[in-house]
Length: 164
Image (tube, rainbow, N blue to C red):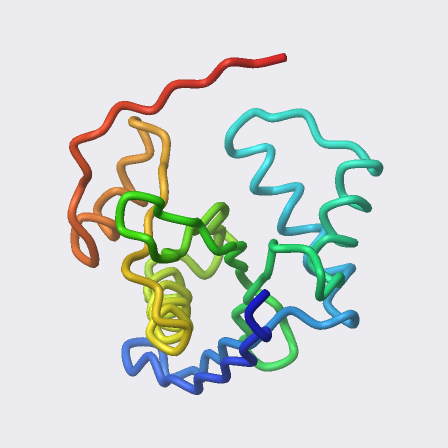
């Protein structure tokens, strides 16, 4: 497994005159992360319980698990997160990255936080020689799709799920 990269990005969103820092998730982020993750689940109308929160948090803290996370900070507040993992691309014989979850506190939306998280993850992708980043979103998530259409190209693939 590739050694985890510790990105740090200090960016100023001049429209709001506040510094937004993007960094790797840390153990001290647990309470803030849980609140945001519950908000993320509620947005997608996915039931959330303490067992899922504990398991996902444990994955993020386990350096041997493929799931990794970034957080966005404004001052002392964690205001967003991105979860990602390496994704093998067998036809290319290379790894890519998969952005699994991206969420920003609703009170901070429209300030470029999501874009900063994607940019920081793009930096990690370059460092790790990933050939691309991919992600999915709900078809009706118009706000997120505006950002995604600006920073990436919509793929011509249909996603299927078989639930067990």
